[in-house]
Length: 178
Image (cartoon, rainbow, N blue to C red):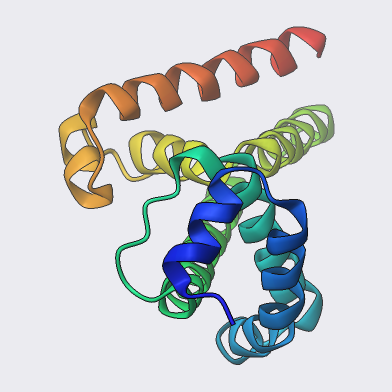
């Protein structure tokens, strides 16, 4: 049995068999763990599959100093927490949108246009990468400044700016199609 350091080295060098072996040996327990947090089997599988996809995609940059198993479980835990946070933001946006809808005009055409716009915003938010959507919501719906967002998410202000630029570009593109 190879050590964690040896497994990481092999994967970093592109050893597909070693990667598949790690996947097969860890997949079921990681999905089971994610399911205890997320409470949904399909979502738990998606989280673990995405983790392994990104692990392979960024294999040259792997820098695991603790145990490989510990790293994988911590990564699944963090991804689950991010998903839960993202869901809360989307839910909060939906709640805010319904509150605004209660104050919306009574004209049926205005109501239809307003609902259409709400649905379009929700679809755009779902298409955005998790962090990008989260940053957009924190800025636009929670009224946080870029430096406050950066501090809360432990990222740089430049990362916040880049994600906001991407989100705004997606919104502009989608609204122009309208």
